[in-house]
Length: 196
Image (cartoon, rainbow, N blue to C red):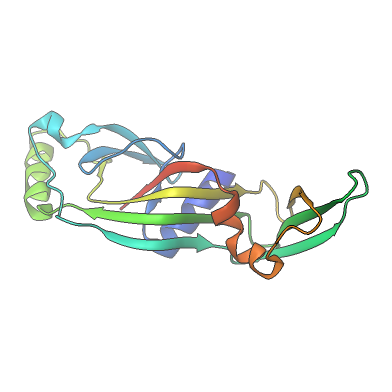
């Protein structure tokens, strides 16, 4: 049986071809290398430790958002508070289905690439042929970083999670957009990286 982390890692790998990094916010850069265990990348060092430079391609691409919510149901509600006078309670319930245990959203994403991929590959092959480089090492040649991320992992199918907040009566709450903007509004600021 897969752990929740494996489930998350498998979704990221199968949907986008990347390996996620745990814990989120761990600082990484092009040329970092390490192993992948249970779908999770663990950093061991950087190729510069072997006298190799991973050159960064000038510029970077930006994707506003990457998310996955297949098999996940969102329910938004707003009702007068029964405990706090002159307040409303806004809530968002996320319910996982039979086949889903993962929801994530990465916001304000940036992608950086290596500019000398073939040179990097050839030098690593040389190290491997000299029994210096381990066969199970992966190298970051493409890195996606996000300013904010939300990752919710369920340890069983049909799990649910509720988020709620009390707001003053008369506050402008865009309920139709609350579901769409949930991850942008509620996620904490962190640097979440995935690698290829």
